[in-house]
Length: 398
Image (cartoon, rainbow, N blue to C red):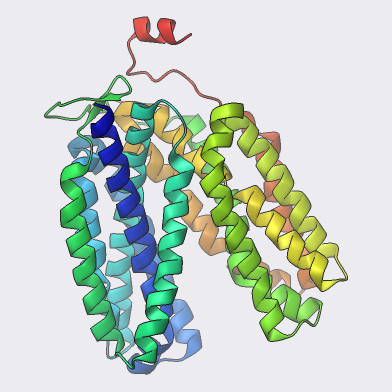
């Protein structure tokens, strides 16, 4: 059983890395795809909403499917869809075909996001200790790998369709190799060799899941602000050189990845409530320092502290949602991931209009407020007995 769990965990790492790599390769090739389709930056911005809409729809559809058929079945199918769909933007010759391509790619990304997180919850149940944050770190590392590979292929003058086609084949190969190692459906918190998954008999999503989803929206809104506005903050507010301004996002992303690599051990020692409460508090302090700093070095440190604080927060929310009901893990994770993804999209969009009435650095207090709210309400991630765990086992666990 221990080897079974270890192999399943490695397979989960493979899918998280693959997801980060696939989406990173799309991001790297956005300029070339935009040029091939002959569209403006403004139109591209609108078309990117289709990517988000497809991802949200895929997340909501995949949650119940994962509960019904098991993540062992849904994860490989989602990964194959996401890998294949990656080629489509490279083939787009106009705005209409690019819009359809982004919608399909978004669906594939949303399906893979929810199903692999549901499987990660199953792995965590088997290990009986936190392992979720490391999987999210693997996603970030996949994005780093994409930037390196993309930079190389662009320097070799590969066309977007050739590069994305080759990456799609790699994605399908990884999918096929990792699929047999995925865990079979879980019962009572441990993987078993069962033929059918536990099917949830509840129709309505519990209120505490929506509370987790709301916190995910706030935390991922804050992350989205860092992704799109950190460099602009240094450039426009502190008048930093372009190269120096780029370090703002770099410092945030670096500490975010490192924090996720360490967060599981910290959560195992102090618990998920402490991770969310203290992490969100540290993030709020870091972003406050960045927003109010008149000096570039202090602002860079603030963005780095912001990333370190946020790093372990979202994995705790996903984990809490998945563990609350083993028979509805996929559906619950889809709710949290779906609202969180909307927050990621909404953050940058909300800050833009706010800059018309407030200085950019003051608009950053919106994510600060979100982090403070998460810190105050962190008790929501406190572990609670799963309704599918027998009462005898619950008593023994106590």
